[in-house]
Image (cartoon, rainbow, N blue to C red):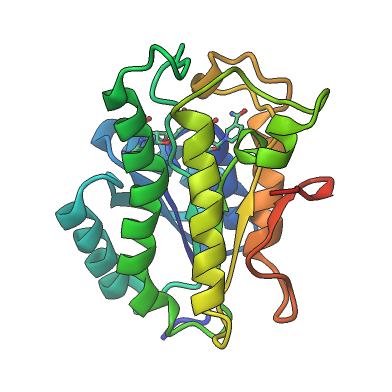
Length: 241
Ligand SMILES: NC(=O)c1ccc[n+]([C@@H]2O[C@H](COP(=O)([O-])OP(=O)(O)OC[C@H]3O[C@@H](n4cnc5c(N)ncnc54)[C@H](OP(=O)(O)O)[C@@H]3O)[C@@H](O)[C@H]2O)c1
């Protein structure tokens, strides 16, 4: 089996995910570019390779069980194991989504991608991660999922949201449960917030660059063996739940 570290980044065709893939590629890692659209995926892989990264495309829609299993098969054939999984793919579900008027389907869509998609991909990749000497899982969450921030006057972030913000709270809770179950293994799993980053997700209203947004995921993807697990971090440190 290759000694080159192998990572999979979901939603890596653009935005923060693309920059996470570029950052891990710059470390000399083999990077699987998970993306659901063939053209966008291949364009991203070509751009990453042109920049010197050892990247390959992984067809991956996180809402498609059979497709996710096929992605795990592809990685097994390509590398035989997985060292790092970055669950980055995410959607807002569309705004506005005030609780009193939200379409329940908007909530369902956000949870399907942002929470169930993460569980689906993580569980499909776990057999490959268990073959790694130092497996790391990073879940891209958001400070809008912090109930402490949402309820601390002056600290609230993001718009009123019945789908996106609660989906990230749910993702944080799921991350904690994985950490509990995996406590006696060498797998470290953490949630990250990239900060308010200019991407399609917010019509480029964010104030950070995608490269800056990628930094925390790269840090958590490269944690040492005694690094934290079951935590929630941004560039400043620990984020309150
Ligand atoms: N931007 C911010 O300020 C901010 C703040 C906090 C947290 N985050 C989180 O950071 C992550 C990346 O967001 P971003 O800002 O980079 O957004 P983005 O530019 O909209 O990128 C989202 C990525 O997720 C992919 N995706 C969406 N649904 C998918 C699915 N079902 N299967 C596979 N891929 C799917 C998209 O693919 P397509 O191109 O095919 O749609 C795209 O590659 C998200 O989890 C987001 O919630 C972002």
